[in-house]
Image 1 (tube, rainbow, N blue to C red):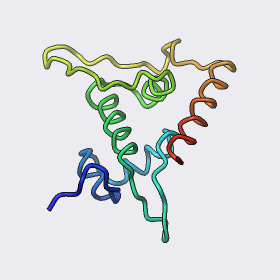
Image 2 (image 1 turned 30 degrees about the vertical axis):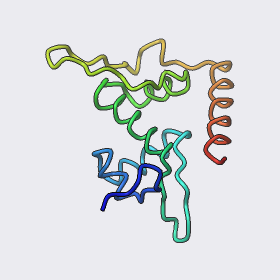
Image 3 (image 1 turned 135 degrees about the vertical axis):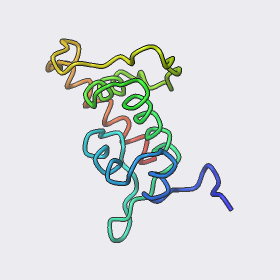
Image 4 (image 1 turned 180 degrees about the horizontal axis):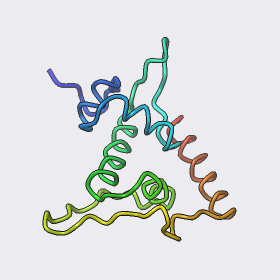
Length: 126
């Protein structure tokens, strides 16, 4: 019997639902401050429905759109987190370059990122 959409997921259930290995989810937690699953006894992770939605968005940006980790971080920080439309198979996926000037973050941008991070943490804690 499948879980309801509002049920919390373990890391193995979340990894299977998103289609990536468990270690990838743990890595994403270190790179995306918005992703903070509940941690209970023994450091067991429980992903809420909002966490699952975020995981699907991150996967779509990294795997479907071809963004780098940095590009996905910037996209989430700018609230451009809508689920992307599928890219046709013949068209190459856009890739954010490490040398891309849009990927550079200034002091003002860091403050904005911190405000967004704090707002997301507060929303997830509610």
